[in-house]
Length: 220
Image 1 (tube, rainbow, N blue to C red):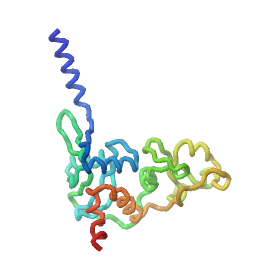
Image 2: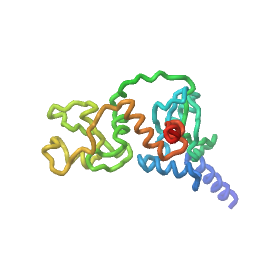
Image 3: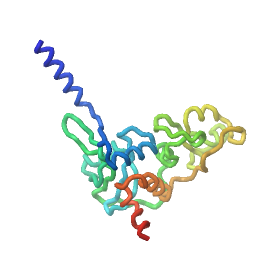
Image 4: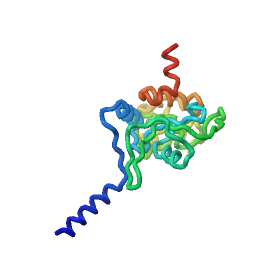
């Protein structure tokens, strides 16, 4: 009987070694996390984290998992915490909300690299036809002008799209469809676009606001 009980205890303890996240309920930070996760409907480890240059200039947004990797590697430090804790059998880590690079990075003022990740970020993880907000794995990219009809893989011709809309559109042009239209005209992901997305998410989180110049605008 004792051996069975001991085995059960070991099983329970082993189960606690799996990574879990537990937001501190009822706090302003927890509410901000809910708002940000609601905007993108992402799992906890993909919750948006604001990235600052060494000069405290906001330069990027990354997922919480990537932010933790940068902190653990000593590339960045946590400036603000989410209020959630990542538990493992080795340590407990506060989930970051804002991180700052320890070495200054020169950021060229030009458009970002054309990639699936950046297209989804530009389009706010929103299908540009039916306006559904989905997690990244439930979205695909659609060529507005299909490749079979001469469409190129460019910022102006690629949009985030759910699988249902992608199947419905197929190889047709938009003017050949009566019930589908673009939510907005696709444009290159510029520095202005990146800052706009940062401010959109940051408006719901006091941890981000002080780094995105909301306070100076309020004073003005």
